[in-house]
Image (cartoon, rainbow, N blue to C red):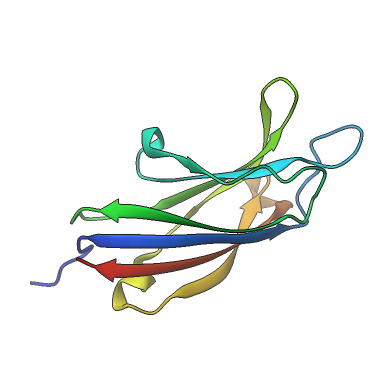
Length: 131
């Protein structure tokens, strides 16, 4: 029987973002990315890049995956403010193609409401290693 999602390690590199929707009235965003698989309580975050709508992170993350039917990578880009943060955009990425051992290097779009416009894109590299 074919394993839908094998157990292993998902290595994700948040490389950069571009054309982020500006959430600030003055200046540019102070963006960071929140990432999680399936459950938000295991969220990981990039560092904050000050005053930049085209930030570069090149920041690696590791997620341990158990065997299951389906996993999704959730990506949320936030704008850090003095008090709290504003959501710039979010997307869900299906990384099933990485189970064959070939890395996926792609831009993930952050659609606006009803997908009519864009709040920018996040460049990620995803690689799966079986355990």
